[in-house]
Length: 258
Image (cartoon, rainbow, N blue to C red; front, side, top):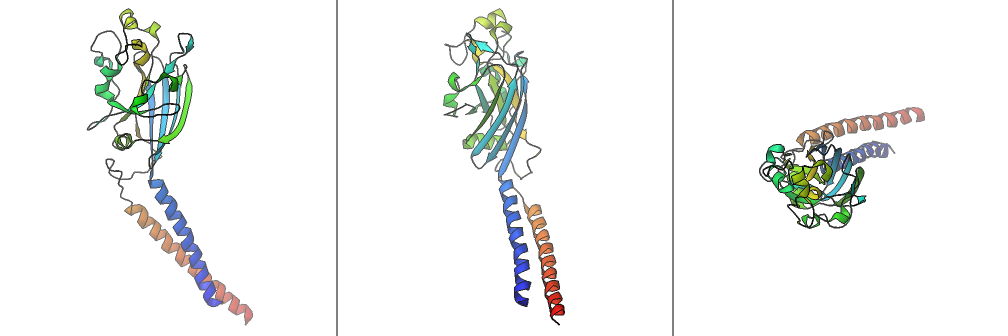
């Protein structure tokens, strides 16, 4: 019985340590990013985006308001994407990007700032750049909440870790554009007006304050030595306390029997 008491209690402590270590390990594999969406092209809209990534599974939560409400009498379809850059941080363009002088930053005019499409934030189905202009899976109306979990491609994940991801929501109110811009066709699809595909909201994604630093953002590799040492120290302390408690219980029982 004495041996059982001395072994069982420390073993329980070790089990608790292992569970805590496993939880800490899981946390380091989850990365969170956020941004505040700012108006582009005088849209007057605003919004927020939060992205949590575990492995290749991404959960995107977004809330927007103040966008164009209707298009041809129906809820306005706002296509939206995570744009990515390579070698430099993605940013939101200023009016200096308007090279045509029509008073609108078109999607292609903004690309030097925020880069190409890495992921389409579609409401269902395909999330690749192939779904970039699919109006049937766009956010609808002047205000909406978007929440979806999906498999994110490796190039977008890499860009987010490097700080090179930007969320862009497209779709402007033609009534707010200049006469010249209101008559122009989209630079992405001539079947659509310029207003339909031009950016209305933009925000550069940054690591969330809730996300623990994990080392080199390019590789996702992290130095967890500090955390490991802390866990080891905590584990050692728990084992010592548990062992002491076990010895105390055995001695107390022996005293009672005597």
